[in-house]
Image (cartoon, rainbow over the protein chains, first blue to last red):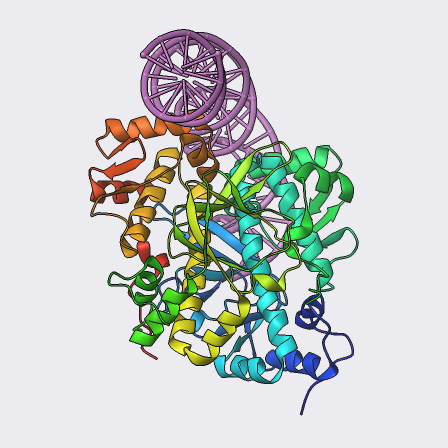
Length: 246
Length: 246
DNA sequence: CGTTGCGTTGAGAGGCTTCAACCTAGGTGG
DNA sequence: CCACCTAGGTTGAAGCCTCTCAACGCAACG
C-alpha cells in the first residue's frame, strides 16, 4: 500500500527540484521514510569508528556530521535538515570516519541498501535525483571549506544563515526570511571554526547592523539581500532547479 | 586490445586497495587512461560555471579543485594526484560549481560516461572500488574542513604533508619519507586558509624542529612519526586496505 | 531553590595578516 | 654570453582579528 500525503514530504520537495518525478516516483520516496525512529536532542545517531548501520534519512529535526579532536575540540562538517540523507554507499565502509549527532529531537529513518538497489533498477528518475543530491552535499562541503578558509567571522555566519534559508525554503521549512534554528552559539562556533565568545560578538554585530534577529530558536533575517551580499552568497553550488538538458 | 603494463598504474594501485581485482578488472582500469591529454602547469582543466565535459582522471602530475572569491582570494579544496578521478556523476550537473587547475604539468584522461556505465554493468568489483574511492574523496574533504577549522598553522601543514605522504605511497609515488611536491608557498596558503607569509614562517618552524626538509620541489619528512603526532594524523578517513566483510 | 546550560561582557594575550622591502634563481631577449 | 626580468622565498614591523580566561546574568528544570 503506497502512502500519498497531501502535502509532500521534505524529501519529495527536495528531489523534485532535481528532476520531474511521476506520481509513482513520489510515493516511492515517501515510503522510504516509513519505519521511523525518534531520537532526542543532543544525542548520537552514528558514532565515529562504529560500523555503518544503514543509510540515514532525516525526516524532522536537525542533525549534523562532526569529528572530534583529541583535545576535545569539535568540527561540525555538515548540517542535515529534513530531506537530507547520509552517504548512499556508506555500507562499503568498514568503519565510520565521522559521527552524526542531533541538534534538536529528530525523526529519522534507516534505509536498507536493498531498498536503494530496487530504486536504482525500477525508478531511474528517483535514482538520478538522489545521486544529484549527493553531488550537492559534496559541493556544500566544499563551500563550507571556502567559508572557513577565506571568510572572516561575520561573513561566515552570514553565509551559513543564507545557505540554510535557501535549503530550508526548498523543503518548505522556512518562510521568506525566517526559520527555526535550534542551535546554540557554541555549536555555531564548532561549525564555523571560531570560539563561542567570538560567535557571540559577531552575532551582536549582525544584530547591530540590522541584518538578523535571533532570539530563542528562531532566526529572522531582517535584510535578506544585505545578508547575502555580506556573505558573498552565490547559490550555484546548491544546484537548485537544474535539470540537465541531456 | 587490452593493455597490460608490468608495473601497475597509479589508478590500479589505488583501486586494488579497495578490493581484490581480477586480471580483467585491472586491464579495464588501465584502459580508462588510454586517450590522454597533456596540460601545462598553472592552467585550468575545468573552469567554474562551465558545462562539465566528462569525468577527469589524473594520470601524471598534480592538480587541484578550487574556488575564487570576488576579492581575488582563492580556496583550494582538494589535491588530485595520479589515480584520482573527478566526480562520477558530474554529468548530471548543468554547470561546474568549482574549477580544477594544475600545479604541475599533467597527463589526464577524460572518461566518457558510457564507459563508466559499461563498467557498472560488467565489472561490479571495479565499480565498487570506484564508488569507494568517491567516499574517500568526500571524507578527505571533511578532514580538510577540520584541518582549517580546528588546527593552528603548523599543524595544518603537518597534516597536509602527512596525508600526501600516505596517498602518494599508495600509488607508488612516494618513498618511505619523501615525495615530489610541485607547489609554491602561496598555493599552500590557499590550501590551508592562511597567508603566504605565515606559510613561510610555519615551514621554517617545521624545518627548525627538524621535521621536514623542503627545497626545490622535493619534500622530505625527517621524522615521520613526529610529524604525524604534531598533526594528530589519524588516517582512518582514507580507508586504506579496508575490505568490507559483507 | 539550587543547579545547569547558555548568552553576555571585559580584559589581556597571541596568532596571523598586511604591507613592504630584499634576495635568489631561472628564463628571456639583446 | 650577459643583462634584465619575473616569480617565489625570506624577513621585519605594525596592527588587528580572534582566542582564552574569567565573571556574571538569566531562564529552564529538577
